[in-house]
Length: 269
Image 1 (cartoon, one colour):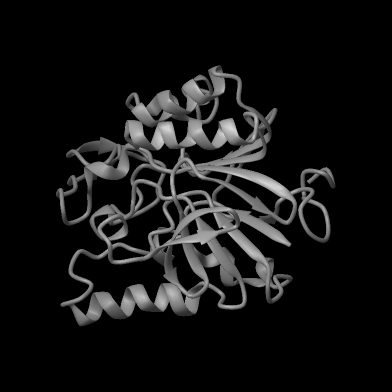
Image 2 (cartoon, helix red, strand yellow):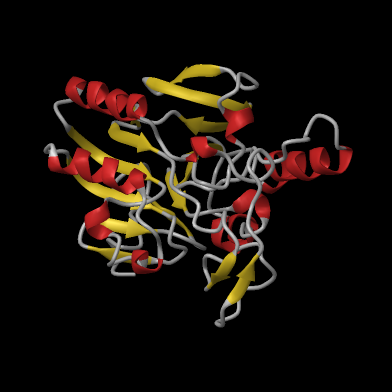
């Protein structure tokens, strides 16, 4: 069975993955996180015991160990550690992934994977809209002191501490996607990303966001003729499906057509 969910933010918004909603998950199942897993976060992980315990608790306790976790990188990840050689880049399901724990992986940008007979294009990354000081509205106020309906003051983030410029994919990531899509004829069953193509951003709350180069790259892939069954992402912190585009947040659901059972969408849920 393959499951899918939205941002987990290192456990802060991960209540649903350990609740009764996820009890059906069996050993050997796979769960895909559409970015902002937050599993690699603290810049002082190796020197700060408290931060090391918090990160280890999320990766080794909150994430169910009987499940294999496949994450896109989002914009709330420590890219200096994730891409800096701390974690091995391994072969996985016909593509490349960074292995964080024995059952936790970040899928490399632009790789195509074959899982249970279905093909997946992975393309993580997105631009942080909370890295500069200013007023924001939820859900962009994640981690700023509440999830109320009113505006909240964002104190900003610090490069190298809780923000890294590598959150935005580069051209090599894009070309890697093109090379792998050439290999499969530019047709996959699923696209998994953190944000969506720019043509979809206003439908999923992107009007509140600044222009994101990641969304432009995803749009370019779409405009080059990428064919897909459905496209899944999580950046906008909402549960919403429009045509073949699906935004995930605080539910964990079966991915339709893969493994045992059918998805809530196919059941009319």
